[in-house]
Structures are given as C-alpha cells and as structure tokens.
Image 1 (cartoon, protein in one colour):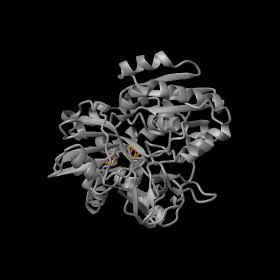
Image 2: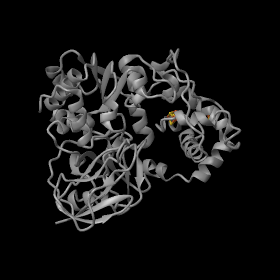
Image 3: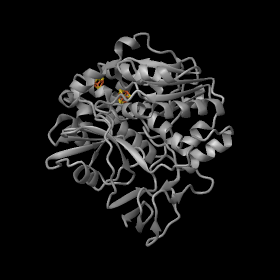
Image 4: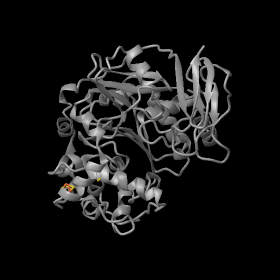
Length: 444
Ligand code: SF4
Ligand code: SF4
C-alpha cells in the first residue's frame, strides 16, 4: 500500500477508483471522508440475517484493512476510529485485537437488529445522536463499511472498483461469500457459475429484511449488492417481498388499533428521535397535505422491525415507503428536526430486537448456516453496468458502441462539478450498448 501523506492525494485516489458506500445507498466515499471528522466508524455489524461477506472479508484481509484504516486516521487526523462488530464474533475480534492499536478501537455490539443501521451504530459507538433527517457528519462522524474500506485500500494501490463481495445464501447447497465481477447478471452468476437451481425460487438482492426481490434474473450485480438469497417462492421471507400495496394500504386503514408497539420498538425512536410511526398509521388515508405527521415518513430507515412487533401484521414500513415516494413526487422536502437535546429512550437496551427473533419471524432459522469464503475465477459472457450505482449524478459514458475494452478501463466518469462516481469495465470485451441507463460489454 502506498504511504500517502497528503489528504488531497488520498481523496483523489479514492475518487478516481470509483469507491462508493458498498453497504448502503452508495454515497461517494471521497465526499464522505472530506470533512472534519472526530470519529471514523467502520461498520462491521452486518445485522441482516444470513449475511456473512463482511465477516469473511475482515477475516481474509485483516492486516490490509487495519493498515488502510491507520493511514486514513493519520492522513485525515481523525482522533478516533471505531470498528463496530458484534460481540458474538469472538475469533474475528481476537484476530483484530492482534493488529489494532489506539486510536483504533473496537465497539462490541450485542446481537440485535438493526445494529448496522448507520444512526444506530453511531449512537452505539459514540453515544452521539444524529438529528432526525440528519447525517453522521453533523455529529462529527463518518461511517463506512468493511467492504468500502477494502475498496479504499485497493484505491491506494490504484485499483478501481470492478468487483463486488456478495454472500450467496438461503436454499443453496453451498452458501458462500465471494468476489464477483461488477455487472454480472444474477442468472449467470447463480446458474452458470454456482450451479444454483432457480426453478420455483425467488432471489432477494440484499438482506431478507431490507433487500429487494429480483424480478428479472438479468439484473446485474452492482456496487451496492451485498447478497443474493435464494428462497422457495412460497417462503414467508420471499412472500413478504411480493406485497400487494393496495391490500397493505387497505389493511393499514382498517386494522391499526393504535397500540403504538411499532413506535415503542422503532430503532429511530429508541435512539431519541421523536418519530412515531403509529401516528403516521393513524393519519394514513388523509390527503398528503393534511397529514401532519406524513413528512416524518422521511425519517423511517425501512428496517421493517415494526412489521415484527405489530400484533395485526401491518406494515408501517411499507406505508412510510409509499409516503416517501408520494412526498418526493409532490416535491415536499425532507426537513431536519431536533438540532439538539435528543435523549435516547431509557428502556432502549431492553427493547432492542434480538437477531434470533428476526430470523425466527422470517422463518430463516433453517438457512442460518455460515457462508464461508469461496475463491472462484469467473469471466462472464457479458456485464451490464448501470451508470447510476451510487448517490448523485449518473456517470457520463466515455466509450462508444464497438469500442474494445480491457478490464479496469474507465468507461464512464463523474460529470463535471457533480457528485458522482467513476465506472470501470470488469471484463475484457467489446462495448455492445451505451444508453442513458447503462453500458453493456460483451466478452471478447
Ligand atoms: S421500518 Fe418501522 S421500525 Fe424501522 S424505522 Fe421505519 S417505522 Fe421504524
Ligand atoms: S403496531 Fe400495528 S396496530 Fe399497533 S399502532 Fe403500530 S401499526 Fe397500528
């Protein structure tokens, strides 16, 4: 790893390599790190059931990751770096302890869901509360996940982001965590390279709580894909993803008994936010402009925990998700509230949701087996690389149809003056399609 001492050079390398948050919405990492930080938190909580790739990556690349973190801390002059990891990963913790030294520390988390939620983790690691609608930097913190740190370490070697670590789990004979080329289709990866039988199966892109159903097996693996979970079509965790929103909305209006269990358990409420999903449920049905609490839907993280506690099987999550879309369409902006004086719920430690309960509720206990590292060389027939795999402006293509491309070539760049991320080819090939959405490359 290069021993870089200048902040600007470090940021330039990270930006050039196209590093974005690999565990969430894909926020460009060079922007996140370019702030006066008091804490840099590495999110290793991996709180969704069946996901293992961050633990595997941490196990495989411990020294590289710790060295990279030391460099970030030194160059950005961060007073403290904290790796958030669940207490139950004893072997990994002991391994980390051999390498880390102050100002790098561990924050050992209980096994609850959603320990990896950015706002929850910031509270657990620092005791600071990000305001409702706010971001970590407002409390002097940046959070990046394990794989993002890995991609930063590769950027320091001038290696662009062209692969993705994913967990393959659920109803597969050999669950595993492996590195795959960006843009490979879900179908080619699972069927051709991993011999997974997809007949009668559904695939979830991401964790079973917050992931999305893959409706087309040509869907590519992107910079934010964390897992591909294969489940029988009728499995409750898969059925839950096929919700008929009309029915969900009708039931919300008819069957909410205002018990407020959803609010009492909501992780955002527990860290001190005034967000109360049961009040949104009560108002649901009124026009957008008349629901005093509707704008609060923006503060929902989509964690889905409210669905577990609701005695009537309702989904405040789905209602909030719907409202967020409607509010955005109506150009009703998100507001930041509570600029200070927030206090965590004193009962928080007792109300956190044990991960085991989430697994059981989802019916996934039988699939809860480790997904160890697997090394597999794969060269897909084609890759499809969306121009928007990150927050910000779509990357602007710098190649044309018919161009011959080598692995690691820049194919789309950050539009001038915009927030965005570069995009590189993950295979040797010929560009077969360039449109406003994606670049497709066929293997040579
Ligand atoms: S999904 Fe439910 S529990 Fe999670 S933040 Fe939103 S309202 Fe709260
Ligand atoms: S837990 Fe269910 S029934 Fe109770 S207030 Fe929330 S949505 Fe309504």
